[in-house]
Image (cartoon, rainbow, N blue to C red):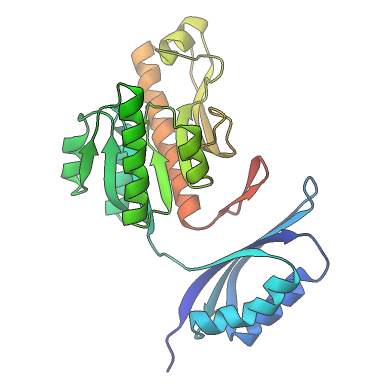
Length: 284
C-alpha cells in the first residue's frame, strides 16, 4: 500500500473567483484529503492567501503535476512542504542568553520544528550554553567595519553550506547591513522590546521604570534595511505597576521576548506566516 504523506501547501495570488474550487479539484486529482484549510482575501492589496494541509499517497512529482495547471492559470506563488519537517535555522546572538535558551530547549523537547546547525555570535559568552545543548558555536568579534563585513560574509557562507532557511536574531545586538538584509529578505526574524521607539538606546527598562510604564512587552518582526520597521509577526504585552524594580522589569521583559520570538519562529517553521506587503498574514 502506498505511503501517505502529510503535506503543507501555501499559495498567494491575485484574488479572483474560482481559486478554491480549482485548487480543491487539483488536490482531488492527487488523491488528497484536506485536513486543515485557511484562507484570507486582502482588501488592501487584492491578494488571496491560502494554507492547506493535505494527506495524500501521491508522490511530490505527481502532486506538483496536478497543481501545475492551477498555479499557472492563477499566477500563484506557492510552496509544497511536508508537515513537521524541521526548518534549517541559523541563530545569531550577542551576550543575552534568554532567547537562545528558550529556542534550544524547545528544539530539544520537540516543541519547535527547527534544526539548528550553528549558533553564531559577536561575543564568546554563550558558547557554554550552546555546548550544553550540543549545538556548535562560533564567535567572531565585530568591533570594526571590516570585522562586521567578515562576520556577515561568514553568515552567508553558513547559509549556503547548511542550506539555511531561516536566520533568527536572538538578541543579536548588531544592525545588519542593507546588503545582508536584501540577500536574506523574508528569512530573518528579530526580537526587540516593545518600548521602541519610545525608549531607544541603553537601559530601556531603566528608562521605562523612570517613566512609570504600565505595559511592557516584545515584538517579533522580519528584518529589513529599515531598522525595526519590518513586518510584524507577533507581539505580547504584560501589565506592570509602580512596585516593580528595574531588575524585575528586565526579568518580565526577557520572558516576553523569549515567548514572543519562539512563537514567531514556530509559526514560520509551520509555513503559517505569509507576507502581504508591509504586514503579515498569520494562519494560526
